[in-house]
Image (tube, rainbow, N blue to C red; front, side, top):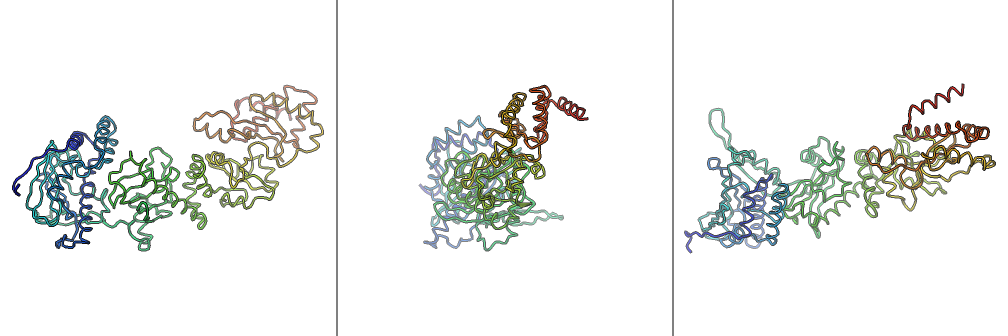
Length: 636
């Protein structure tokens, strides 16, 4: 065959099936074609640079590595050109005429199954098997490739409309490299309804979105017409080329990190913390992570876009990759770049990607270590972090077990009765514990003023025992999931018996009479409480309600009720202060009147009053009001 002869060849069967599906399907993300072609051009330059290390003649003076984009608007053509490695005649047939990757049959089967499904899913399947050059047919009626390998006398021209055949021939091409011309479909021109790919500003935007950090300059000519009709030409480099994350940390100013974060992640505040690292090992990657100062308003919403950006050799692969960090670290913004990533990594293969799992494990350790260092070295900064994102850490403890909890537990901080306006860690609490104290006490409530006035707190306040304050709804759920810290159990002030004091001897003297009184009160409240007993914790208050040791607490019940989750009622135990004048009054009524209607009224009133303190509305407010009124009249 001479250089002037051309061959007409058929596509490999799998290749044609794939092209048919792509050409005849509608996708929402056709713009990835440009990322694919630029990535191929960048790889081609990488290869010729590598070969030149042992064969300098391969460059032949053409060593200003560049990727050029151009538009022929008159003919609706988009053009991309590089001076990379190029291809020989046989390499074009091997690389372009067939799908070299394994799994093509599986790809076709899955893609056909997805035709009736969501467009993004189908697009992910395309990416999964490496579209590369073929993505051109998403936007083009005809694709022409002209390429020349180093030290070859001739170039090669390949052309196809995706109709089942392609034409290949040798042609003259002065220099090494590849030119790809796309004859654009009408919908991607100025006359169409899709993105206008003959608009240079649109191309510039796509480059900056998907290929901004490709290490070679991506250039394009722009034209501007002046007032007097003259046209000026400007050559623009469309990409930044050297991304921040590949530079040495020591060469980067804090302001550069701040500006990058604000620009890329659309935040008007500077990040609270920056985590920048490069890893060389089983998996090679660079990462640049940011802990924001403020939580987005929708951070707990299902619509929140969590996850990191993925890059492969500076090429954008994916946004919001949620597999890289656990849900409780969803506040972290940033990116990961690894040459080991497949450029077309899809959400459907993330679950099984070993490299991603290794990176995910390392990133989690890195973020948690930085948070622990912040807690130890800069408590004020950590307090800012905790105000914004503490609930997510608590959520991580509540939703996980074992080692995952162990990694998070030392990040917990709470206000307490012994720390004034400061927050205390569990380790600091344990260090301050009394010698004979064998539990970590906590109390739930709305705020400090409220919990310090609770009747259940009186004994602990008298004994000077430290109590952790839980003001977030998730706190008690997290602690119940944790169960203990440093082999020390948690104990709610509002649950069970505190076992700190004995009932006064004067009360025990008439034990049988008191027992009968308590049983009668319990009978009157049979549908409301599981027990009525004398309190060992009350000092000045007359009565209180506590939850049973097991199951829901009353605070948990309120939270679940607010979430419209009916998990039943918490056990309620009515405790009466045996030293209070009210108890003497009850005993007197019981002695003189027995199990009377008045004792029944007093019992229900006591329960309602104790419920009010716990934040529960009386079941019958009118009846409760009448009882209070009658009591006031009686007192008069």
